[in-house]
Length: 308
Image 1 (cartoon, helix red, strand yellow):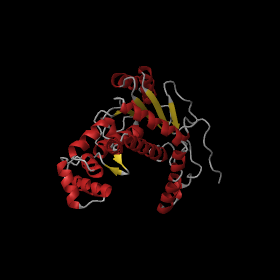
Image 2: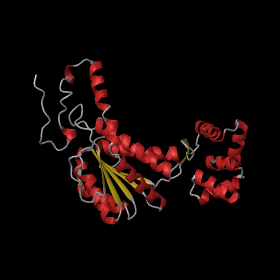
Image 3: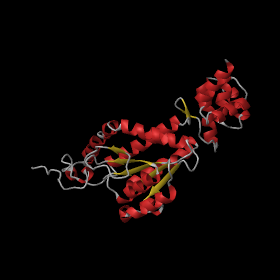
Image 4: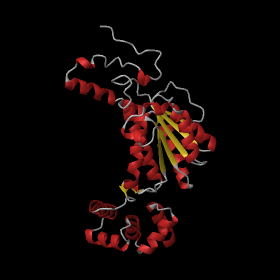
């Protein structure tokens, strides 16, 4: 049997037919899953290839936040939903201020649950939203499988005109960099298992990129100590227990000593941690953290410098 070749006229590699999966509808259930899994294994390599560009995006975003500006995510369809998910998880995990990460999704909140496919073609809507919400010094990250989604490109162009730095995550290495895009992060994930179903490899790659991007930004912003979450909000019994475990992991001290430190710090994990690790009282620990923008390692370094 002749295997169909990918058309030369498709808009994006993600829209072409995958020659490896043309018989998928004749396979057993297990073989279907194996085929999907085999294609999914191509994604980490595609992400690894763009890490230098992603690193630049992290550094620019970190500098934006450090100087009082914001990070914006812009997407449509799957890309917008993934961006919304990533931003939503940063507050409970890292206790970020509500205005650090803003999401702009074509079609608005209603399109998160019910597809609004026409919204992605509205370039003017994307431009208007970022003209209203972005400002010079912000960092704007757009996501689109095709690399050509009008809503996203309109938003990036408008943000760029305002003086924001812009980046585009695309699954189309063949697409030229659009006007208004400062940094292009082009993932070569190829055609999908099911042609055009970009919630598959393209979506998986974008999810990995978003998670890596935001996690790296949080680490650079001092929202972790080592690989421990030290900025989370302990709003329930489970999270209060996690705070205590994290403090014990970081200090090597016992349950009672850490529980007392947390009480003295009024539940602030970072204050308790600096208090115990630096051997200063909670007030001095809080002052050092305030002077280092909440960065535990820098606060410890500051206190050690003063102790010399």
